[in-house]
Length: 318
Image 1 (spheres, rainbow, N blue to C red):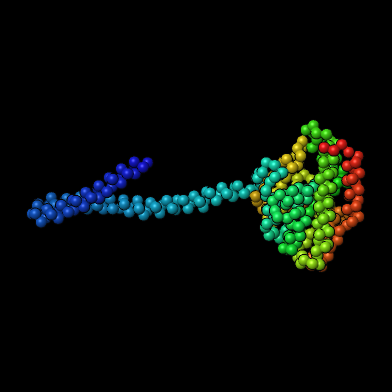
Image 2 (image 1 turned 30 degrees about the horizontal axis):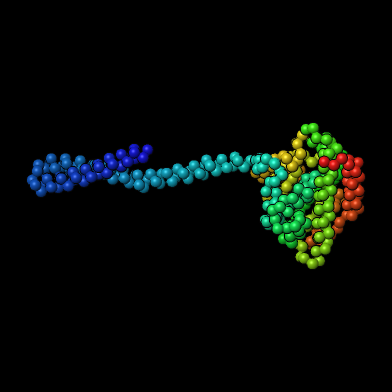
């Protein structure tokens, strides 16, 4: 291609010089007394060569550049943008495993109006990311900072008293792991989440009259089947599925990329939220407008007792 362009350029400039030469020769011929018809032919040939090559040069340097720019703009606008829109439908895999995925802690350093976390031991999972990748000592400090920033926070934790626990244990041990061991692990992680919720509540209760908390938070139990874990930070929604024969933390992370699908998943979890929104499921509530805080100690005590008894009955620890 390079040699071809060089050859075309060489021919073009040669013809341009030839045109000028013939025009000049015709002028000299008139001065030297050559035959008028002969000098006229030389002049016409020179003008034709000069005109054609000049137009070619203008086309190459101006028009072709403009044509290329317009073509690129057309491709960008009508083809590439269309491909982007195709890519934005549904969801895409952003990590092969939930465990270790960096996107789960973005909310710590971003300002979001809303946060919604749902999973069977969701606080236990988030706590690991907060401690590893932020300056906070624990998730309770990060949550308190979000309340200072005016964020509304919803958190759903699976009720360990639900019959769903036995079903999940059965499904996740199809790979040969002991059901007793998996049940113990699940109860341990859920208990850890409740302990974190307890710390969040106590910190808010201690700080609500000292720090200006402008956000709201509700931490609630749910007993519905957790088909997937749900993580919404602002407008970003991440989904993690619970697959048979696979522990939840080992499954992939999927990012929802279009508004319709986001709405579908949001509506699903809002239904779960509304279904469990009563005094038997709400662990912690803080409403900034009224500086109102409540921690349901009866539920906390009942959960701790239930989990401890269940773990004792499955005392073969992993």
